[in-house]
Image (tube, rainbow, N blue to C red; front, side, top):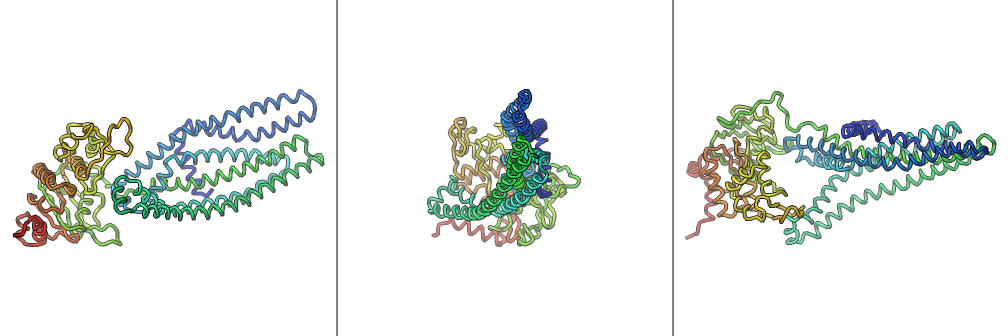
Length: 598
């Protein structure tokens, strides 16, 4: 095992102690006893055979009693071990998952989650936590037990024949080296297949996903996706097959070497017995020790190799845990004041990566407290990116965003976001009840049915929810429906939009309301009603409305037009229309669709 492997094993051992100190100590004690049993059995058997060969009956009961005690221990210990391991594995799994998801939740921005390399690392780390580390700890304890057994049996062999003990030990070296090399190859193969595995899971999910079912059937995508799944699996299996063939050849050769060593050992013992240098009990013990040593060697090498492979998997978990925060933490966090003056963007530039073009270019914008600001522009203008910066999912590449004069980078992101209510264009549809789907917008309000219902009425979702079989307690999913869930319901896109809007509105004491295309999935009548309610609600409140539909922004206090990452126009609706610029042309284009030519 490499130095990194030993370090990871020590880290995992430390976590086992944290998960259950008494359990870990008990497992260690049982492991030591179990490891000594084979050596004890060999020596007691030797004593029994020598006693029987010598003749006096009074020497027989002691070894017999010893074998009975050893047999009793050998019968009971596996069951004790199984219970201790199962309980330890459960506790370790809880600890590992808690650590991993606490760390993932600690990444306050989005850059990690838009990085394919991190997603691969995270998938492997999640695989390491989902019950996969239990076999690792069991394997490490098995490794300890087999090392103890091997040490004891080699010691017994050394007493009878130092040369034979040395031969058996030396024969183990190529076995260990070959096995470790194979496991490193397997680990590299698994890491190399990570992207293919994610593609295979993606294609498989499209075949089985209820949301994709309509298009898959309408466009006849079933065979196309099936071929993609089978293609990825075939490629991954081809790599596994090549490695398995190599392993079969190597393992067969090493098994032949082990058999040869055992044969030499037995012949050597017979020779020593014939020359009078070993008793009958010695020969029995010698043969048993050679066979036991070979078995312990094979098990030790197997345990070490398996542990090494699994510890490489644990390495992904450790690497995720050791990642630095994606957003710089403020050196001296500043308390965020309630918004009194407004939010200001000063010369804000942003791009997602140095190899990517600028998404925002020198944006200067003030959102006064209590003002209703609308942000409009064509696709790709930078509207959604600007929202991400306001929410501090990313920091500007240049420039600064101020909240009443306070740089938002000096404020903990959680405190900043607690002051906002946000509806994203790509909102989530949670497999939860209607009340929970709204309540997640303010966790403290999850059990406050009055606040949830008020938000639903404001968004227009109240009428939708009241018509559901169990009202606000209806599960908005059919994925994991159980008898206790009643009849699950799948909402339409427009109904989900209203529920998501209620989620943004449930946070009553927000300082800033951000709405990104709040009516994109609504019909004309519903859109008109939602915007009417929102206009009433936004009056006197600080809000930012992002939309393509210019009819929804006519009453905004300030309309800002983005193009190519720059603010190209700003003003009221009437002022921008009178100016005859890009906003006026876009408004005329949309309005012309509702006119009937004479």
